[in-house]
Amino acid sequence: MENKIHIKEINIENFKCFKGKFNLKLNEGLNILVGDNEAGKSTILEAIHLALSGLFSGRYLKNELTQYLFNNEVVAEYVEKLSKGEPAQLPYILIEIFIVGDDLAKFEGDSNSDSKKECGISFKIAFADKYQKEYEEFIKGENIKTIPIEYYDVFWTSCAREDITARSIPIKSALVDSSSNRYQNGSDIYISRIVKDFLDPKDIASISQAHRKMRDGFMDDTAIQSINSKIKTATKISSKDVKLSVDLSSKNAWEGSLMTYFDNVPFHHIGKGEQSIVKTNLALSHNKSQEANILLLEEPESHLSHTKLNQLIYGIKNGNNDKQIIISTHSSFVANKLGLKSLILLNNNETVKLDDLQEGTKSFFEKLSGYDTLRLILCQKAILVEGDSDELILQKAFMSNNNNSLPIESGVDVISVGTSFLRFLEIAKKIKKSVTVATDNDGNPKVVKVKYADYLGDNAVDFIKIYFDETVDTGTFEIEGKRFNYNTLEPKLLKVNSLDSLNKIFGTSYLTINDLHKYMKANKTDCALKIFNTTETINFPQYILDAIK
Image (cartoon, rainbow, N blue to C red):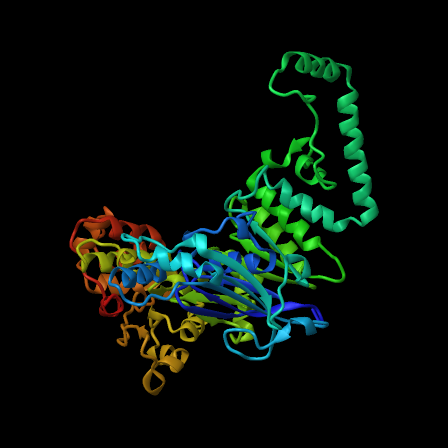
């Protein structure tokens, strides 16, 4: 993207979920926004699109201002001050977009909230001074419940203090929201605009002429002429000529009347997943040399099968050479595949980037994209275990000590990570996530201590805990000529429970501990599931109990 115009930074103030000033620094290419619901992912996409196009939900906002765009708390504080007779400053919304690229001199100046020299765009919804006298009369009234939006206007300027329009902005955005259908006529208007961008003026003129000929043909049709004749003689609503026709109110009327078909099916009747892929690929293909394009993708995983999602991700990764792409997602698969280095975590109006993860960690999650990285990133607290049986046992231990309540009900997510503990801990340390590891010692606690040396002893991290059994158990039992390992989860469970109690839970009748050892080793997940579902009292190894504290 060398010499291509792109967004380097945005400020959002008092817009929807953002109270006060929110700042976000963006990567030149790909950006993946993650966070809990209501964290502001969608709002960021909407704000960028609004500041670059003037459009909100597919309509020009200037003529459709509403108080519901403002942060609720900001509005409430304004209303409360008025009710108390205190001086109350009218709230405003400010979206600032700072851009980098060539030939931007006319956008350069210090007219921004930080008063620093930047190239940028300011989109402000604020009180218009021309209504000052009317406003003073308004606030004398009683029971004011919200801001007087009728006294507001849109102020769209550059950092050079010049008024601007969408046409004068040298960077264009396309918002693709696959989670809903925001645009009239199945997003045909959106597609028409993108298709139009591929065409030169001669092509557009040809379409307009063909559309006019269609209109003329409609009017010349004998059936239509007969109907218009009837209307003319029957109507008494006007002295003027009344007839049916086709709208040609503007030279670009074709944009709103033409419909896009796929295999003879109207666009708005094909599946939403296919719609998402079509809109995204069209936006990625947009290639006017004088423009740098911003592609805004809202939850691209919505309505897509695994195969289709792979196709979409492939298109995004390979269409990112000259585009800046900003994606919101709840999908670990999407985040992993596109690369954690591009991920931006939103939390309490703050942002955390994972761009400085070790290359091995970034590559690992990209290649093995099934890992639930976002579960770790978005949960309140995580407990990491090796496999399914460990997860079931730990969940049961938690329930046994918390009135049969699942960990997730207390904001604790138990995640199976295989042997990739250190990969997940690297992410946890970066984002300061509270994480506990519950792991076997496998007969060698020293090896465990070496493995987790960065999180133990003098290197201990307050929010990361490592628990394992430091006792090494031994015995003479062998299975198929191999020495039995007494230091995994199953034998540790048998150690703190009786033979009879476990036989009862499993529905077995083994007479010796070794026979039960053999059974539990061969049926790990099944045994764990039976323990999870049992109503019988069961004891747990101390390292498991420590992990659930």
